[in-house]
Image (cartoon, rainbow, N blue to C red):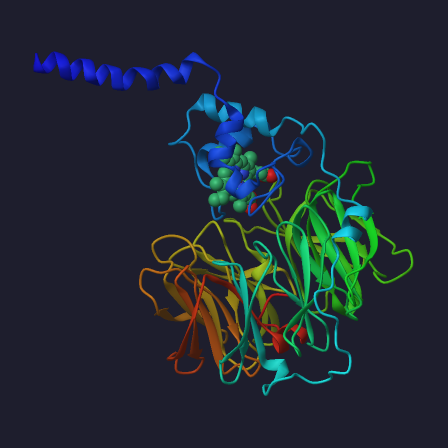
Length: 499
Ligand code: HEC
């Protein structure tokens, strides 16, 4: 009796599930809402993850998309669903994300202009900070845990302000050359201008639906916005974020493309634009002109994640296709001058440079493997590979310190911080300030005396560490401080930090 009951019970428990799986077509919209919408947006228009629309998935084969959903993508926030979803469910989701929306949302001139607002007028009579601190030694800390930004005094490490930001800031804030204003971009397209002298938000505009990053022109007059959706590069007037130009991103062959990122090439006084879907790199030599021009540079395959040498004569781009590794583009001739074989997903955007035995070198972490590559920039050869206890995300140093700091972002050693001696190219210290926690992203103060380190957790902190003794001198509680940026190091384009 007992066994029969148990068997019957087990059957009734098993049956519906087994039935549901093969009886009817999975409800893709419901699956999407349950598993994907939190990152890719309710309308598939993007959030912390990219927009999932046929227009944006052209370069991804459907079989690869199914693979990404099942296995996730290493070293990104894209999780694996192979254990949660059946093959049929994954197939239904693939079909769903390649189905065009009934109507594509429009984000053009009218929408951009209507979104702009000025919370507080800039007070141009103010010419100094309205508080007692070195304005060039401030830190801007992005706290993604609860979508806030903190402003820290870089000498006393007191918090001067904390304000609510837009949803999911991305790509690093950009500063005007004098260090007074800072601009933020959110994944959902909002650009915010903040006055560091009065500690006020002074302008906001929504320049896209799904946005990657922003750049500021060399003279601080133009903000360029790189969009995934729509396929545009938007130029704004840095004074009040009013719209200057919408540049539709279309390759020479007529295909449109997402914009991976836009960068300021300061010595060239230009902007450089990375295109995601077409094999072109753009340079805009005159971003503040009445009609900005576009110089198209053809590359063998689309590249993203850029690094520039200090003169900006060369661009290193990560190639994910046939030429795995990095290709080196001479920006003056527009020719590829070298391929650097770099397995394990180099994170070039985090690269830093210094001089080693009279030679200019750069170092880059890898997102896919526990290694740091050191490359001589005179010959573009890998001169040293450091083995690390796990893949890293950020690498930082400062002109005034002999050390470079690298995090271990992924895996069981995510609490470790590595110290590399820039003179010997050796790892000389392994630090562990918060066992079991993710410890990442270092930024130095303007003098190179202190390294600020993130405990990258909801209940996290910024640790202020003496860069010579490696001792923690202060712990400032923060909600997942994903990035921090020192005004001086950013506006001087310090060789120890990314730009
Ligand atoms: C926790 C956040 C998160 C969730 C949940 C999530 N994704 Fe993603 N997804 C991402 C991120 C971030 C990326 C971008 C990865 C990268 O940088 O390559 C991504 C990338 C993708 C890609 C590749 C897009 C491309 O252009 O290469 C596909 C396809 C995808 N996700 C589908 C899905 C589906 C379907 C679901 C739900 C079953 C889902 N994702 C759930 C964060 C997420």
